[in-house]
Image (tube, rainbow, N blue to C red):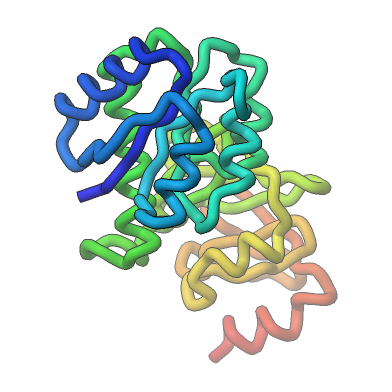
Length: 230
């Protein structure tokens, strides 16, 4: 069970959040606050797993509140203003809900929070079969088995996935390799990471994976060839 609180300077908005939580499985809304300072005092004494937080509040913005949190806590921003989406991304929010919030969209956000909660707490049987990346202003779950290859583009990555649109995430190749299981994936070039088991053949400094060919960079050649020939 995910334990949560909600913070919004509008009491009606808190009524909506409370109603949505009651209709969703897996979330226990412990308390609601109209004053951010009171919420912070509560969190210092009683940490929770998830915070629903409005962004535009007169006493303290939701952005400053999240920055002041005493511990790492999952956050779902709730706001009427779409221009804050980038900020929510930079603050590593689980999701970003635009008011008025409907049940379907709320349930999607809770599902993301539950998946990530299980992942960081290593619960369930599939926690090592997925990774989570931040893209499209929220947290995205990607099954490792569905990754076709990963392409590096300056400060961004393109994650090519089976039967799904390509995900663009702002992160480095090094950070991505740390997320991936090194037994299943290998970096073969400064711009490419591929699933090792899906490599079909190697011709000189080129490897074949499905209908695509990838160059093997000089920096990565020795490590790749030692592993591939063993």
